[in-house]
Amino acid sequence: MSGNPGGAMQALSPTPPERGSFPLDHDGECSDQMQKYIKCLKLVKGENAPNCRLLAKEYLKCRMNHDLMDKDEWKNLGLPEDLPSDNKD
Image 1: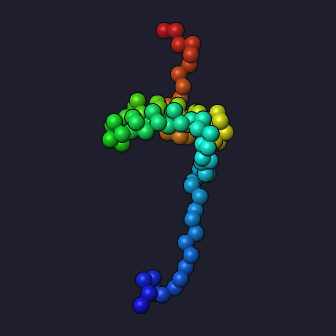
Image 2: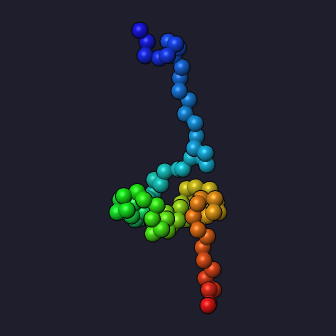
Image 3: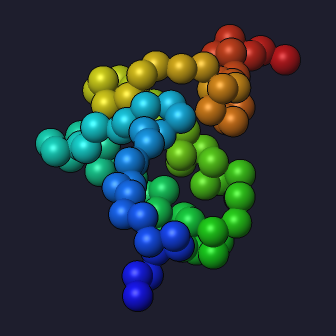
């Protein structure tokens, strides 16, 4: 008796992530940002906290700057745009 429905042996074919693969950070160029982000997620028990989102943004910015992921706009990544630095109210 086979564990497969219908008895057919079919190989599973993995599908790539929607936005492409993320190369590993072998040199640890963004490990500080990653550790801060993970620590934040643990503190808020995985909730979508604004302070963790800012750390996620720092981490992704580091990955983009080191060509560990394609550059993209923040709105496409679900993160807020940077505030203008000349904000003189």
